[in-house]
Image (cartoon, rainbow, N blue to C red; front, side):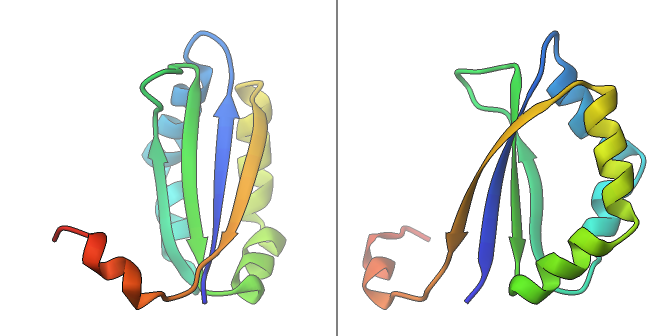
Length: 107
């Protein structure tokens, strides 16, 4: 069972996209992807809202998330959020395997 958090960063005048770019260009995102227990860390821009960036952040379990939240990297992320004056909302999902869904997936 894994945990996925969708974080929606919203700003003004492209600040959310600038934040995501800086996370990638400075290597912070790469370091998060390399943390033990991280399964996915990717940014997306919704087609109907260019001032929002969606982060899909998946972890093996709550323990991995807690270690990430306790890391010094969280201070860096918080500083960047402040720098770009971002507001956030989130959704949290716990996954489970369900084989019956496979028949609807085209691979």
